[in-house]
Image 1 (cartoon, rainbow, N blue to C red):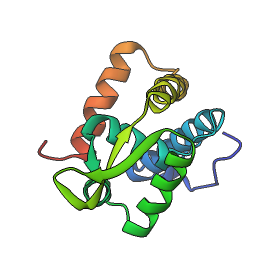
Image 2 (tube, rainbow, N blue to C red):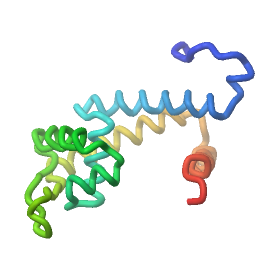
Image 3 (spheres, helix red, strand yellow):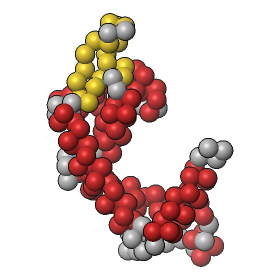
Length: 147
């Protein structure tokens, strides 16, 4: 790997170092793939959450994704500007905005999910299907202990 920084042999054998390098490579691959559709990773995450949770208040969306409220306003503004979500008063509480995915948002999300899947396939391309399944299971146990 030409873009991998030098690390002493002992460090290169540490799971924490390897996980960090794998995460950095995966992040780069997915970010590059999404950029082809004019989408950033955080915008993709918000759009995915809106599809899954929507209609959802902007405040709840921010809390759920652990995104600062000011950042969430900017992200939703950009998604709305691209006609990927709609924002309207929440019928349950008119003081809040309800965010919903639009038809354009659903189409974009289908394309970006496919691109993300292709990037992850490239990331794990040297593994067999069984190894990929095992990797996901092991990473889940490490990243989400007790779940």
